[in-house]
Length: 116
Image (cartoon, rainbow, N blue to C red; front, side, top):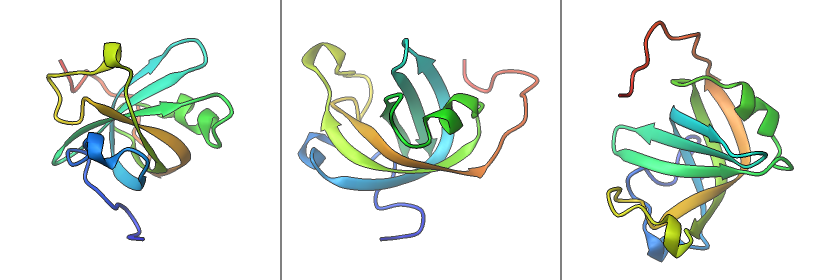
């Protein structure tokens, strides 16, 4: 396996469901839904939604990571529920259930948000 990625963040589709993947990129946005965390991971090719459960190794690392922190994750591609599919995103039919996370470059507090 490549040290940083098996796929780019814009490459995953519904046909990849069940595949083990490694992705690297910047944390674009984080959403915490009461113990279930979603991270939009961005690279030069697109966005992929990551899902972390509290029992996921590295969950505490993800909680502390700020926007624009560079991470590498290993996980499994899973299809999104029909109600959660995002037709505006090329990777909107899938998400990656994270099994492992590593911080490659920690971002400091940003003076202004970089996404709008």
